[in-house]
Length: 109
Image (cartoon, rainbow, N blue to C red; front, side, top):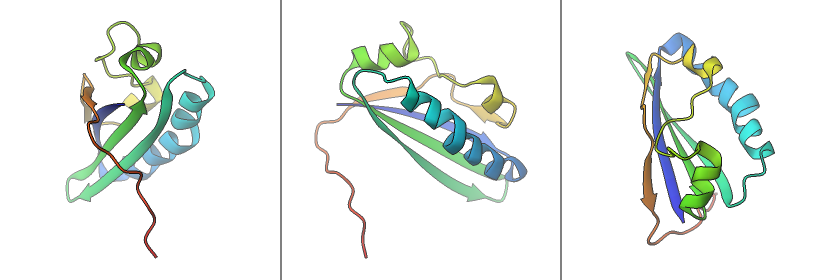
């Protein structure tokens, strides 16, 4: 399994609109592409005095699946123009890690 990790940063004023764009448009669009080997996405957010940091972790079953999503130069970040207008800065490249050991997260009551 491959984890594709990417960071983006917004101003505090753009943080909620950016998260809404991710949830309602970008993540839905990725899911609707029906990429073979795409296993899902997680969104992490950390608010601070100077803005918000977002981390996306996408899960794929292979690098071939990552290439199907991102293209031949699969390390390049895939950032739609609608997201770029809300971001103050972002990683130009995504990092890819082979998952050696992993457990499915469980909800705690």
